[in-house]
Length: 285
Image 1: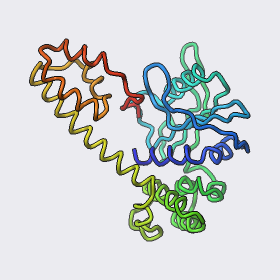
Image 2 (image 1 turned 90 degrees about the vertical axis):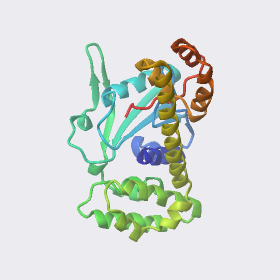
Image 3 (image 1 turned 180 degrees about the horizontal axis):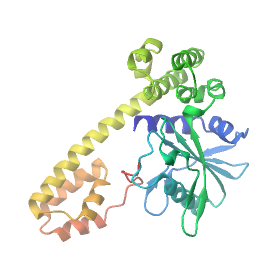
Image 4 (image 1 turned 135 degrees about the horizontal axis):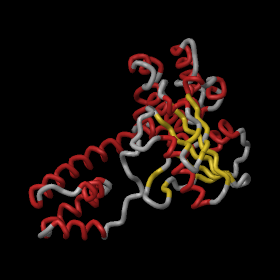
């Protein structure tokens, strides 16, 4: 998840840089859109609206090819939701961060009985690092690019990070570099080239820590509530359990208090029916 959060941070903080890289677009008239899509709530990784071109750039970052729903189908699903909501031209790029021989990393379309949907696929380990090294926003991705000398590439990235003049930006880019470099390099090498203190002071590092703490708290609350419900009513229907799993920490805490007044499973079902769904469904990766 930290790799995902890092890539999302970069794409949302530097949307124009990603548009120039992926679409060869020089426009600066760009708006970062909500990544929550309509219908059953799911969340895309990055959705940017290029206003002058009346075009959306949708990015999905993957560390592995595994996914609850096949990635090619997910790209179609995202496309139809974006099209329904914004009704404009949509460019989609599925970016694989780690080397894989999985067939899905080499597919560029979803094919069904009556549908063919095409999208672009980038395998970072095959990409030339030169354009990535030239842009501070893309330096973290450069650590995963094609090279015959990975350590030399990482040293180039470190030198480029040191040249970033603005302190906050240098800290945040450095943190992103260290997170993504962890997919390819040993921690000892990363710490040799980058200051861990700078990483800890960065916004993205603090955000990753906060999300990790939140996930830990949610897991504990979820496990406790499911145990209490099972003890009180026996086995919980899978659909009901799945809905409980989508609740936020605050909603879980409210449920823990409310279940003291439940007298039957129907009370639980009715209670959940009156809760607004979260804008994100887990388990889609």
